[in-house]
View (tube, rainbow, N blue to C red):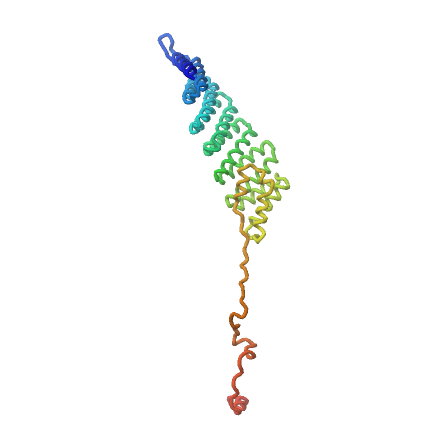
Length: 328
């Protein structure tokens, strides 16, 4: 290990010597300096001195940039990203990837720039999803500028899935629509059908049932039979408030547990699993009646009251004659 570090330090001295100027040497020798820094980085990596390896790669990239060798400068930054991954220093990866992509674009290699963004985003996706999201967005912009529609649709899919994972449903709906538009340009109707289901799920997660139904009407013609049946079960049975009954939650649960949804991308499958199901209108249970607990109430105005009430005592005999004679 010590021999490797000594060798690396010798390469650094040679690189610094190449960068010095004099009366007879007006311009630094950036080409040889970059090469010496690159050799020093290799020695430091073999010696497991990753901090110094990364620093040498950064210096090599700067020398290549000064020498207008933009592609080689970007390659050095690309290697520095891998060193940061080994060091578990993920905070610098996004910045390095953006710089490398910019250099690749200046050189005229946008595909390489999108690739380095994708590579960095995959490293950050689990622990730093927000940074990964921004890198994927930039990757979409880079490839769509170059008319690489199919690759752009792939990156747009990753953007939408991360947004769903982060609960950014409004932005996810827009990202899915953009992805659908990219697939339309290449004529991939099968992918559009799957995205229609994803868009309906996202709209339902937003609580916007009208937008969910509109998405189904707009893109449902691209869905196959299983997809159409699943979406109809969700929209026409489970998520129409006026149609709630005791069976609707069970139908919605069966629709969300369909094999098609379970085999979607993980983010959409989890979204379907966590969707709030509608609750059916519950019928109040009948009250338990205890027989003969109290005497029944009988209205005195009812027709049968005379039978149930005790008869009045008979009055004097002359009372009948007075009634028959009337008041007169």
